Length: 215
Image (cartoon, rainbow, N blue to C red):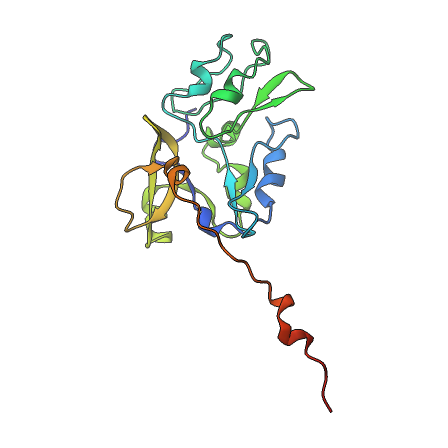
């Protein structure tokens, strides 16, 4: 049974609180063998504790599958890109190096690439992915566009990403402010921005905290 066409995956990085509930829940998916296929990345750790959940974006034209010499990575008819198939995976790491989102992970002890498969054992029978069922802040949502529009009236979903000269369309959506003036996110644009040195002041170092007591 395919994933219902009207159901989509939405990521809202601004709502992530770094609780790692999704990481734990992902490892409990029946097909993951106790290994979590989701990770939390820090946006800019030197200046903030803000995290963002990272899942497979399930590209319309998955680069990981295109570079696999053993034809181990398959995309289902409903657009979900599966983990590498154990009998065919040769652990060459081509997929790990090629993915523009940095998603595939090679499990060296198993000589196998495994990644987020959108909890296919659940979504293909109408259930939500494990991560979306436990996220307390709504950073991960699985449902219809009508539902997400009601839940996030000030945001809208985008699923087109620009990497230099390459444009990638995905099955997973990223929530952006509703007034975002573009229909695609330029992922590499920030690489060309000039460095802006910033001073971070910690309140604990304020001189006022160390004024000698009077009286």
